[in-house]
Image: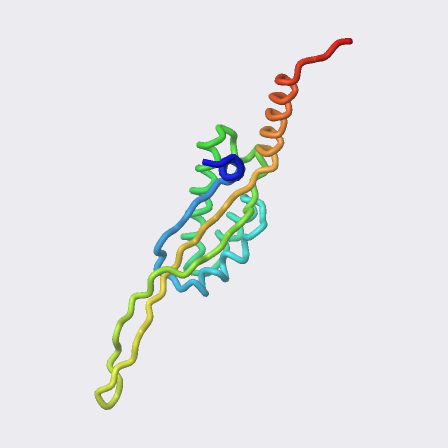
Length: 152
């Protein structure tokens, strides 16, 4: 592996360490309906997002709430920090289309109408200000420890 490729791979790997992701695959809800709910929580604080989802009267809200709680648990498991102390927020949230089940509905005069039962994939990425600060402090300590003190 070349040096440039290795460095870019290391940079990507380092960027993933600061991301805490949860994914919901093949959710049997239309992507358009799910996006309405996801748009409500994008960029919000985690506790505020959970409150919004609790009082949102949409079918997708409980599923998204469960996914958000899973992302919080992933953060706590990866870092060992408590979610309340770390300033978690929803950094990214997006909905992608998944498989479409195609069904047939009888129509007049021997014809048939196609029914498309859509499903989606939801991805929630959390960010934490406190965790970023902690990582940056450790890296700066590591760099300062590596550099010897020169005395003239």
